[in-house]
Image (tube, rainbow, N blue to C red):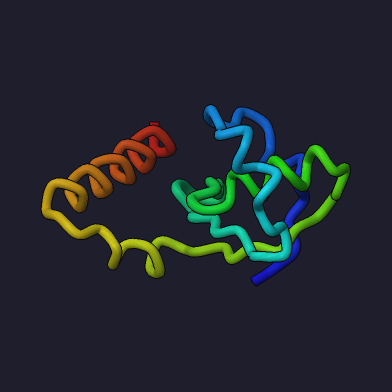
Length: 96
């Protein structure tokens, strides 16, 4: 768990339920997953992050998960293959 900068993760958020934002508890840590080397995406807590942003809060607490932590949650063979193909495409792009 660590402190993350709100503005680094609050841009480009998907459509959010406005009525839910006010009801969220920003003291609950967000969950971020590393989806490519050094790139983390919010996988839980988008509403809390938006609330913190609107309140002018600069930092919130988050869990940052490495692939070894979130890969076990790929619960289907299709999801696993898609995940591997994604990573392989990143490796190939870095090599070229």
